[in-house]
Length: 100
Image 1 (cartoon, rainbow, N blue to C red):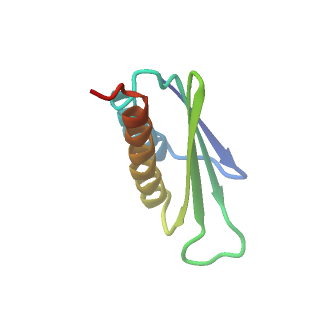
Image 2: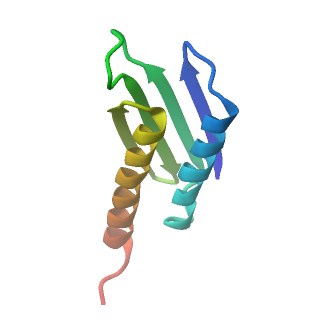
């Protein structure tokens, strides 16, 4: 799975990029068809505690998954996005699997 990271108006650290690669990369094990993950990070103005906005979009043939979170840290936001996407992917796979 290819993971692209877009940071709006700031530079991401290599630690944050490695964290995102690790966490979002885990989603590939839930659905083989996921080919691309698009991660967007931005800092919401005005400066408040919960001002780190992360959104993750997963692409698979014929379907798209999306999650967005605003938290105190980007790591927290990415963790929550990954949890939401896991549930979405598993629910989608349940609907696609033939009933016995």
